[in-house]
Image (cartoon, rainbow, N blue to C red; front, top):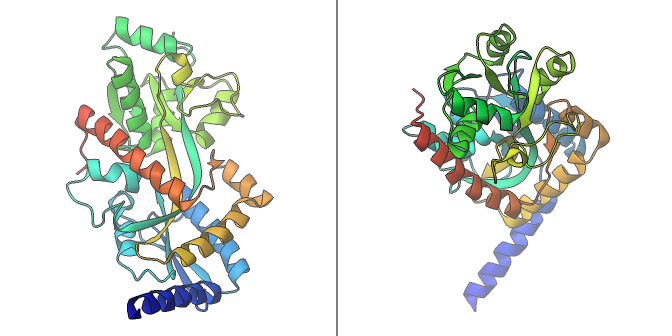
Length: 318
């Protein structure tokens, strides 16, 4: 009887905490430096939560280790709702395969709240490249296996891994040329030093529209609104292909269901605001806004997919 009384008491306490939360400033850990997509999304959501909660939600940039340092810091804080963190594919579903050791377990140490946005990759080429789409790229690479090079913003990035997945699933060979960031890689592509590049939407779209680059295909499961004539990789003959970067909100594991539900509900209201949707669309992302359960299931599916790509391509990051 005492056991059931204690359980009921704890349940009531959790509900009360969720109702009175937050009553002090909240830290929002940003695992990357200021100025990038992770920082922009984090600060947008933190500002909106500050308005909704009437307490300060403060962005705290903790870069390093491809985003793993900040995630490790967040994972080790108390699960009381006063530390939130924005994770993404690179430090949740990819990092375990790239690094010898990371300071957290993405499944066991972090509680998913919601996936915020998904951002597909656009595979682009110089306009002079003979292949005009993914089907023709595959055919070209099969006849000239040593002639195609592909650039990426860096070893182990989603831009890199998305093309490695294409290579593996299509049975073709292409030589990877890693760069230190997207700007140099795109400059080299425009100059003809590399054949193709897996780009995020924001830098690629204006160059495609200006005719400086050609979009061969997109890595999402459906065509993109800004590029309706560009087929997906899957519909170009590579069945079941999908490769997207994504961003999502996490708490340290152990937060009560009531607290997770409270934060999730407030984020849902924010993610459906027109100004937020417009701002995130500028990052080339589609708002997902799923449940904690759906987000957790997605992560468990995504991890083995990327681990296979990393293992097959023998990719390691120092």
